Length: 399
Image 1 (cartoon, helix red, strand yellow):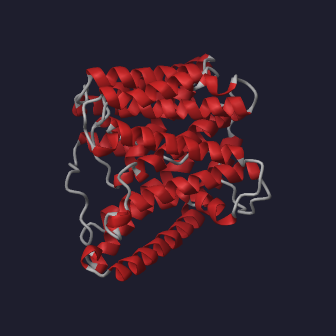
Image 2 (spheres, rainbow, N blue to C red):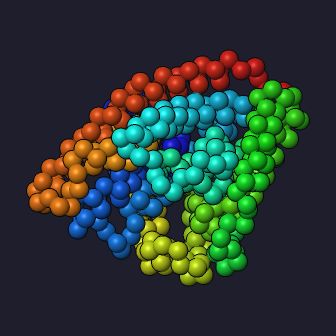
Image 3 (cartoon, helix red, strand yellow):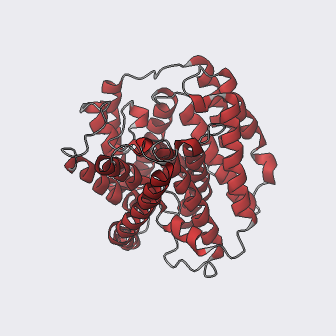
């Protein structure tokens, strides 16, 4: 999900760093779309679109941003350990704070009914791999973080093997895998219990090797983590074809970055992956309304068009509000569902209220989300990102 990229621009002046400003703006649109998807069926349900899915659109936009910036960040650092320090301090602090808040608020706002406190849930939340270990998340939106984590693991493995620059090829490979899985796999092929045990063991051993091992041991740990990630995404996802499709989207973002940098031959590098992605729903077993071919293709096209528009204006001044929304987008993404549940517990069911009241409550809810997100960004995200950068700089050079 959606939480990608180098540390967001901390100064929201769009003229200061326009190339990062456009990425922040695209993130802002993505987080807003996801929030609207979750709130519109409660407030003003008549405005919720069904010809495309706002939530899937938003996360696909996030995944394109991740693909564009994450490999570039790793290549710029040239250091797998420093890369992981930055990523973990970017993702985990707010993630843990929000989970703790949801658990603490359970007497007032019960935790979702479909979450079972078992090994899969424990392993999934500890590793951020809930969706590929067959467990719902304590917070509904954290399923996308599974694919963020998988992407990081795969990109790191490709980096240490020197195959990370073949982005178009990897995009097509994962899109083809999504097509194959859509035809051949209808339910997760991995048993959650054993998969969870193996995941915890490989995660601990792999990151131990990355953190403390010499060069070859570090490489072996990185490769083991990458192999685990690919196995889980192909065989463990709750919607089996969606995981490889998401990885294809992210590698499309990477290919677009390389095109932007003059390293590949433009859209031709991603055309095979795009065609394969568009074909997947025609073969997949129907599972949900947004996976219908017309809805899926429309959603993918709109996400791609949004990212393309961002690229087209990347050297221009970007409106301040969009940049600011991008800066706080991770907070918006994580806090809006818990706040929505709390808000509805307090005000009741808006669907029973007049439309004008629904509109007023919707505006109030958005204001609350933005206010809380600004606070969590300032007091949780930003300090921990700074700490992560300091720790990364203090690491000895890889050998």
